[in-house]
Image 1 (cartoon, rainbow, N blue to C red):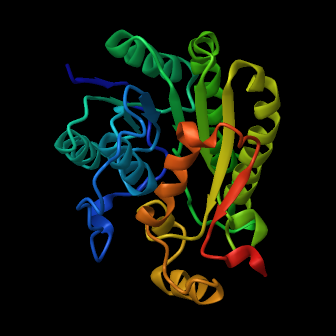
Image 2: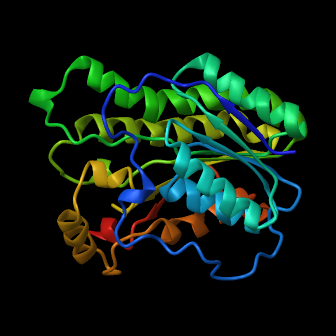
Length: 285
């Protein structure tokens, strides 16, 4: 059975977290290769799965045999498209709308997954917002909003799922952070701070859960053409970033998710506490 649940949050900023419909050209969601069952029998929960890296991850996981829980904030049309793409790959899905910076919402999401499938093996913390705002113009409320979505949600989702993962003796947690803390870009003080917090969270948590067979890693993508990123930067900046990379290509969600798949599969059992730069070589400099 495929279920839908909604706990509608307040939306503090117009346009957040971004819609897939704004992208031009539109991403190509056609399968690039047949799945090989690398996640067969696994239950995966992906936050921010309505678009961008979250959607690409959900579709790839579905192709690799996972059942997929699609969590998102408010973009109902995008989330429905993600579900359609996952089910076209033969996956079972649940879909959940809510503000994961709220402890009650995070627990309600995990409860939904457990009621549906009885277990949870993989958590991809991808939910995030990227409003570009210079520090002088930033209120404390705006600072806290970004940290609540981008960092507090990691804590809350992980707190909710660990009691389920620990008895299984196996689990994979992947946090999508950013290469932005290593760069100097105007208007991202709150965003870069939240993402560097995710790096520290990853390293610390990995030590706490290793004895239970759970690995924790982070991926720091380059600036990519995703709905969320384009709320904070424009196509011109994406082009400039691409030219600074060793691989001179504007990043797309599809360029990132192969790394997510590796870190959530059995193949990565000896990799934990790492932040992998999936950035086309940008941070080689």
